Image 1 (cartoon, rainbow, N blue to C red):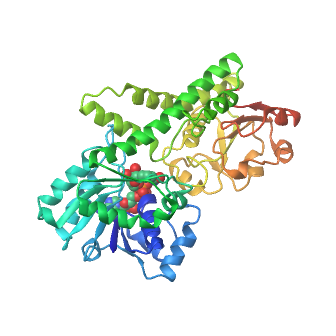
Image 2 (image 1 turned 180 degrees about the vertical axis):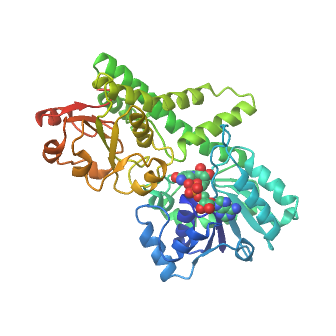
Image 3 (image 1 turned 90 degrees about the vertical axis):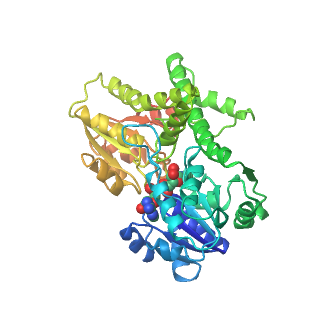
Length: 434
Ligand code: NAD
């Protein structure tokens, strides 16, 4: 079977390589020639654990994987075409920008020759895959193609593992022929007994947004509970632990913090709400989650400023972690960068260190002083903010840090440390919700 994956971002590149790993002939197509040149040399355009090795393996030693900027050529004899281009939030609106998806749909329609399954793997609002069907059927005969919605649930930072060992695969299909082909693609997962959930196209599209929105709701919920804990002297970690033991609730996504960021949750909640509004459906829960999350970095900064009696001009803050979460260099909608920006606007100097995301962060916030080590970042600091919970920050050498900081005050935004331990080392410790 020959697969074509259009768009070599996080989803396209990982999906393409993993399908090649499953044994399928796969071509990844992109319009970004710089990206393709780097990929052809074995250089991934972003950091993702295990990606270097997987890319090198398929470029050097298997003949199954290739890269191209020529969609027409790539689509020759294709059996399945995946659309994995970006669907960012539209400027000045909350809706998903589907320009790239529809452009690709036109290109597919102009170039497919034999029967093929066209799959939307990008996260798209309900109705989009149907629109892709309309675009394609306006140019070619209906019996030459089928459409499928196959949303992707991989997480940056563990993307390869998530693709190879997913909790479930969702296939939104209405043609038996297309369903059979999709099941064949995911056959390597049968050994793991991965549930394959086959639904209508519309349900599949909604499953993706509903899943992300539910996860975001858990985060926003526990963050508000953390605020209450802080107000009454309770401990949100104890509260979350006891809640999470209840199987109906579950412990995942119940860790309080500075709010969720990244390229998916913020934009997906906005797009989910926008489509509900269009259809006159009340989605006030989702709007409340977005609102609460957008307020969160400001609240955290207010808490930090309050510790200095709002007198922070000229003070130096050190921020550990800039990526939106550990194990990625993705800084899209990074909460750390939002906090850094707010502190800079208050007249402070912000220094920062991140194991992988500094090059990307510099492009967005050049005003930060980027440092090469934890010692360098902490030097002369009036406060240390642990903003992203990279493993590297879970066993810091606090004696060395204390020796170089001006004021040993720590703001641990993910509660990775124990207050007593740090107080014993003569630090002033501020966690969240405890
Ligand atoms: P991305 O922005 O990293 O990559 C998109 C790629 O598509 C880019 O390389 C771009 O050059 C390419 N592209 C754009 N137009 C093209 C065209 N006409 N032809 C060929 N290539 C084209 O995006 P991403 O993070 O991989 O996300 C893609 C989709 O998957 C989005 O809908 C996103 O919401 C969804 N998703 C992302 C994740 C994630 O963790 N990043 C997880 C699940 C789902």
